[in-house]
Length: 324
Image 1 (cartoon, one colour):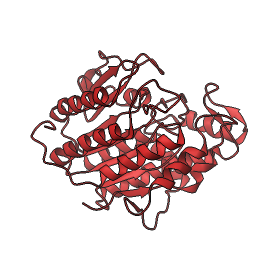
Image 2: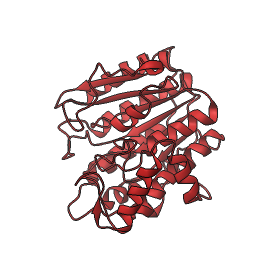
Image 3: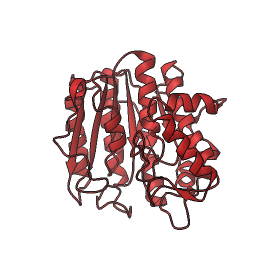
């Protein structure tokens, strides 16, 4: 198995939401320090799409009015977008454009067969961002954008798997009525943002394409990993995806200040291993992972390294339709 392809860009470090903010450049620096060439390979000749192309494709996810509102807030920085947790600084527009551009570039490269597994080290995170509202440190939903691109490029279903401790309500909302993009989330409940109850299953053509597995405070490796493995077994039978897109959030680590979960880096390794197995069954091994949460640099660093190492590991054969 080739090493996973790494996508990142220095402009993602330019987002400075304010002194003491948990979502700061130290997160991405820690991640990049962990990802040496032993476990991944940088994307060769990486050129981000133009701003026009990025904004054009982002209109699949957000309204033009919202995109313009975020840009104006960045031009008038320091300021806030839809609440105190979504503050922007003078370099935030460049970071937002780079993060979405990385997701778009990586999805297009996967669709054209340039790689089989990839990790996109970006910030700010994305999965809380709604069509016309920033939320939970997230402005533009790069995860939804990557899934949308892969689905449209292949004309086949895609599965989004979100293992961040905080529910990705923005991604869920975007695909809520869609049967061609599945959404599986394992998350802490009740916790921010308050969504993700077990009876949230989609609507219309999307009924059954959303599967939420809410878990209580203090969930550990065994609890979370077992829940994700069962959820994958259910979803792979409903959505035979051409690719799996990961909202790879690491805020569930026991050292992270923003969650009460008790995961370790070995828990993230086990979850990744399960995702790799199901990808081999249905998606020919195609996995595109995008960085979401994780706010304690040392635990984030160890968890991301375990995750990317496992993305590059050979998978044991999966028995249809699950992971056993």
